[in-house]
Image (cartoon, rainbow, N blue to C red; front, side, top):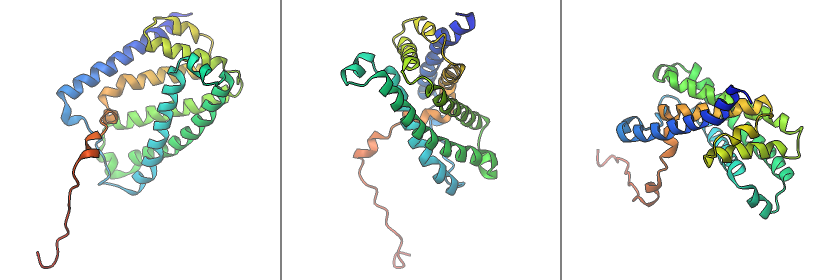
Length: 231
């Protein structure tokens, strides 16, 4: 195992996750006025509507698919009667569907951000960087499906699960050793994913942590139209 491999998969994940948590905490504590999605809906609605819904549905499905698929202990899958082969096929099918849906939305949003004059003029360089990072990560993830089709026994999936759970449970370098022989596509996918975690606190992505739970119990706002008599 090379020094680069040890750093990329045994040390870098801890750096990225630490920066994400500490940086997000500091930004929420000190820069709350920047904690927003910075919606550009008022500037352009048509393409935002076309791209935003499939992107958000797709990325939410991908997120929870990765979270459940990688961090659920192997014993739980065995208890549920799900074999490694079945889990591999489920990951390919679900990941492919949500990935394509997300890709469509992300391409629309990226083109909108790059080529719509008003959106480009009011956006920031980091907005473009985030979209390109997500696009590259999504393309790597979809490309890994073709590699996965070549080993439906679930062996590589088990290696990736071991790596993810080792990082999550702070088990040191054992996870890096487990994925030493997997395809470069999976490795690039992991490194880019950790990089997205690293830049997370410095982007508009932080808005995903602000779930508007209070809105569920908030009183309705009554808006009355102005009539001729009131005018």
